[in-house]
Amino acid sequence: MTAAQMTAQWVSKRCGPLKGVLRAPGDKSISHRALILGALAHGVTHVEGLLEGEDVKRTAQAMAAFGAGVERLGEGHWRIAGKGGFAEPADVIDCGNAGTGVRLIMGAAAGFDLVATFTGDASLRGRPMNRVLKPLGEMGASWVCRAGGRLPLTLKGGNLARVAYRLPEPSAQVKSAILLAGLHADGGVEVIEPQATRDHTERMLRAFGAQVDVAEDGAGRRIVLPAGQSLTGTRVRVPGDPSSAAFALVAALITPGSVVTVEGMLLNPLRIGLLETLGDMGADLSVTNLREEGGESVADITARYSALTGVEVPPERAPSMIDEYPILAVAAAFAEGPTTMRGIGEMRVKESDRIALMAAGLSACGVTVEEGPDSLTVVGSVRGNHPVAGGALVTTHGDHRIAMSHLILGLAADRPVAVDEPGMIATSFPGFLDLMRSLGADIEAS
Ligand code: S3P
Image (cartoon, rainbow, N blue to C red):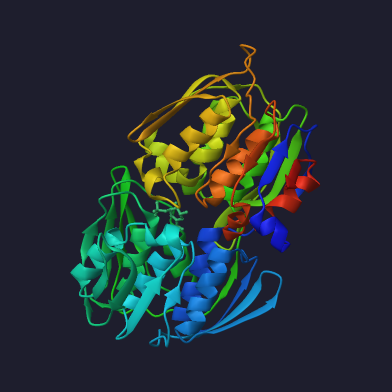
C-alpha cells in the first residue's frame, strides 16, 4: 500500500457483479496465539499462513522483546524459537491497535518474574484492561496504570497462585489471558465462562502438548488447565479469517449478480454466528470442501447475490459473531424489514464504540436505525423500493471494521460512500483493497 493510500480517504461506488475466488487472510486470533505460544514453548515453531497485519506484527515484535527468536522466512511463514518462557524486556511493549495482542501478552507475561510496561495507540489506550487485571491480580500479579485500568501500564509478574475465575462477560481475550498466566501458576488454573467463546487458545495449547480439560457448563464451559504444563514447539497452519472473509461474502450477497468464493475459511463452531444469521436471512451460501486443518474445521464458502429478509438475531449468538455485527448491519440495510441485534453491549468496548459508529454511519447513508444501550436495529426496505442512499463521508475513529463495512455498503448504494483513516484497515486485512478490486469492486483512494 502506498503512503497516499494510507492517509487518503477511500471511496466505494456502486459496481457491477462481483465475481471470483479468493483466499481470506490468516485468522487474526489464531495468528496472535501462534506467536505467543511459540515464544512460550521450548523449541521451534513454524507458522504458515500467519496474518501479516499490523496487529499481529506488533505481537511478533513483542515476542522478540520477551526473548524469543522471531524470523520471517517467507510470505506468512514465520519461525519462532521459543525459550520456554519470557525474559524481562528492555523497553516498552507497544501493541499498537491490538486488544487481543496486549491482553494475551499481559497474561503470558504475568507468569514470569519480570516487570514489563505496555502501551498502544490512542484507541487501545482508551480500552478497559481491568477485565484482565482483576483475575491476574487475584493470581498474584501487580501493576500500576492510568485511571480506569487504562494503558500505559506496568505489570509485575511471577509467583502466581491458582485461581478459579468466573468471567463476568463473555470474553475469549480474558479467558486466554488467564489460561496463559495459568501455565506458570502454582496449581494451574480454572476458568468458567457463562457463554462459550472462541476456543483457539484451548485448541492450540493442546497442539503444543498441554493438557486442557473442558466441560460443558450450562450455556458456557468450565476450562481446567492442570499444574505443571510445558509447551513444545510445533507447526501451526493458520486458516482464513472468517471475520475478514465476511466483507467479501456480504459484498456478494448485496451486489446484484455476484458469485464469490472464499477458500480455506475457518469454520470453528464458535466463529460461525454470522453465517448462521445470514442463512436465517435467506442468504444463498454454500459450504464445500469441508476439512480439518491443524485441529480446526476449514471449508470453501460461496456467496451468491440474495434477496435478504430482516431477522431477530438471538442474543446468545453474540460471542460467535461479535466482530461481525458491523458487516451484518450492512447486510441488514439491504434486507427487507428490520434486523434486531440484542445483547451486543461488548461492541461498545472494541476498537471503537461500534454500536454508536454503525448507527451514525448507516443513518448518514440514509438507513433507518435505532440504537439501544446494548442493541441495534437496522430497518431495510429494499423491496419496498427504498434503496440505500449512501453519499456520506463516514467517520471511522480509526476502526478497521467500521471502515471496511461502510466501503462494502458503498458498492451497492445509490451514491458513493467515503471513509476516513483507511490506513487502519491494515491492522487486520492488509490486502483488502486489492482483493476487493480483484473481484470487481470499485474502491478508490482519493
Ligand atoms: C478475540 C476475542 C474477541 C474479539 C477480538 C478477538 C480473541 O474479543 O472481539 O477481535 O482473539 O480472543 P473479546 O474477548 O473482548 O470478546
